[in-house]
Image 1 (tube, one colour):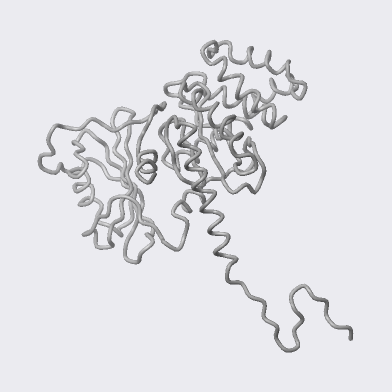
Image 2: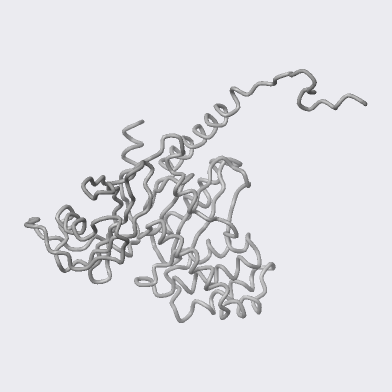
Length: 331
């Protein structure tokens, strides 16, 4: 079971990708001189670090390197930075921990064992006012970043939206976040805007639209999207086609899609579908069996954490103090 869990969480399956690793030479060679460095504070020796990262990651001079402004790491004396390599509209980003003297570099993530290992992701995921299914307060929250034109999102939709929710009634709440890959899917953003307009009228109607647009994905084009969506809206008694038309040309729905995309970018998403199960990232199409395994693991974790928090509470009866829940004695 442990090896299976590792395989599930470490593997990348089929996905719609917007970005990928830049080309790399066959051999690393000598470190290249820095070509470009982001505006950064003087906390770290960024030119030396850029040369080091180029050598480590085998990025040639043609790759533009950007090092983010340093942020405090969990341990004192270290900083977190994101290093991005870009070439021809494609990019790759990695996280590093760097000592304040720029002499020690740690690749990957550093965790605070006193916190949930995915707490930093959970803190970023703002799921307020997003389409949802399930009961608020469920022990497991699944957040899906999807693209209505992505074929792999269509494949994953039935698994997440129907089968997973049926397998865990009351235990899972699902949220949908827009992440249209406009550079490769010409109608994806317009479809996301229309989805937001439909959600603003009725949450249940959004999920009907979600199912409908994936079902008709191959028939839809940038030219016929709005007409077909209006025809769909006429079949739903909870929707007003006139309101939908007005919303589609307003700025509000578009800004909501942009907010979702910006949040996804902050999380480093570069492919759809991307799922977060209680903050745990899962990229690509994931089987129902594997999703169930992760959800069951999270349910057990939440129950154990709750039990640990409640296990040691005691009621102390102190002189002159009424027990909890008791009424004060009459004066």
